[in-house]
Amino acid sequence: MHDAPGLVAILAYDGLCTFEFGIAIEIFALPRPEFDFAWYRHAVVAADQGPMRALGGFAVSADAGHEALEAARTIIIPGWRNRDEPPPPALLAELRKAHARGARLLSICSGVFVLAAAGLLDGKRATTHWRYCEELAARFPAIEVDAAVLYVDNGQIITSAGSAAGIDACLHLVERDFGAHISNTVARRLVMAPLRAGGQAQFIPAPVAPTPRHDLAAVLDWAREHLSEPLTIRDMAAKALMSERTFLRRFSEATGMTPKAWLQHSRMAQARSLLESSILNTEQIAERCGFASVESFRVAFRKTVGLAPSFYRDSFGR
Image (cartoon, rainbow, N blue to C red):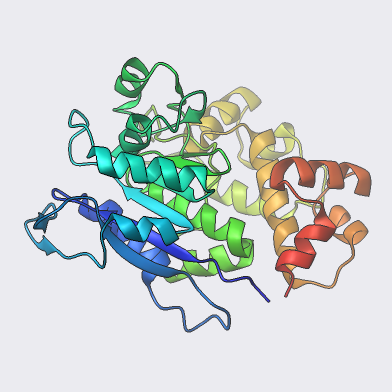
């Protein structure tokens, strides 16, 4: 049984970023008849008084004004219309109040400038679209800006990079609330790959050759099927028919991660899935996921997920 995840307030404003707003609506407001538990309640909350129009020219109507933020467990800020325009002081005050009472705040792309203007990111790590990272760091020097990641989870505040990374950040929040199986089910309904790790790079710095000599995706699929084995860079490079140096370079360009980090992420994803859906015990799961001992598995799982495997199963097991 899952706890009700509460009200998600999705901000709307004149000049609304349409795609980012659509991401929040799709993930948190869409009915989910495939689940037999309570999904998120949602409300579109007006950040501005008066008529609001979204990019593309269509009108936007809201369910409520700022007062609805007082009841929200989660507040989504889907971009901001102008990074140079200070957000309304009344909105910033409500966001500070919501943060003080423990509400969760999630920004997509330029929405981070609203959180920064509210002073809620001072002393914290955050990200935004790579084009805006230098500006964010210059204007708000108290923020530790990370331009190399898809999203940053500070616990109560999540900031994401450019538009599509907002999908990953929202799915990450779903995973926190319901577990990996449910977030991946939502991803499948979106017809997209499962949740990407927040530490993955925002973009590939070098173009991929139009006719690559080797299919790296096939190597990743092979590695996922052999996670129980002590895979090495040499093993993966040999499977790709590359030198280790070439493999490391191409792997980093394609995933934004080292092979070691990618393998750890893949092993943790498989472990979460097995804890949620299988009757295997912890020792069997550790072996299935390629850990040398159950103790090393428990330490790695707690470090990555924040819970002991047994507590994770109690929370998200089917």
